[in-house]
Image 1 (cartoon, one colour):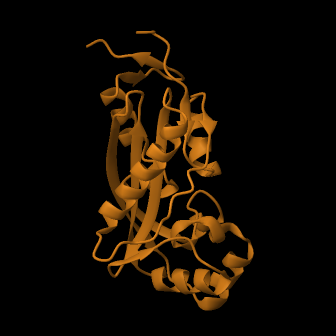
Image 2 (tube, one colour; image 1 turned 180 degrees about the vertical axis):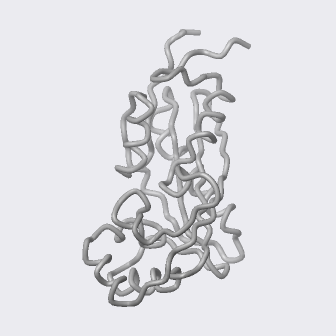
Length: 203
C-alpha cells in the first residue's frame, strides 16, 4: 500500500468547516453531498446528526471511492426540538428568541468514508448558554445575514459570538467540526494527523 494518504474531501460547502481544515494545514477538496435532511419521526438528535453525516460522506465517496471523505452535520437542540437552518428571516428571529437567556445543546456528527467502502462516525455534544436579548436585537443580528445558513440561526465564530454567555464542552463542535473526533476517526481508518499532513499508522 502507498505511504501517501488518499485525497481528503470535505463533503460540505461550509466555509467554516473548510477554514478549520485549513487551520490544521490539511490539503482537501470540497464537494456538496446534496442529502435530504428531513427529520425522521422519533429520531433522537444524535441519531439524526450521525445519520446525515454518514449519508453525506457515503454520497460523495460513491463518486470518489479512492478518497477519504469527511461528512458532517450540526444541529441545535432545545426543549427536545431540533433546530436546523432557518427557512427565512422570521424563522431565524424566532429561533434566536427561543434560545435567548437559556442553555441549548449543539450536536455535531462527523463521518469518514474511506477506500474500500468502510465508514466510521462519531457524535459530540456541547452546551451553550445565550445571554438575554429581545426581538429587536435578534432582528438586528439576522439583518447581518450571518444566521441564515446556520443551524439554530447563529454562528459562534462570527457576530453570533456576542450572544454567547457560556460554553460547556468543545468549541469546535459548535462551529460544526469536532476536531478531536475527526482525528480519532482518521487514525481508526489508518491515518494519523502529523501537524499539517497525514501519515500512515503502523499496525
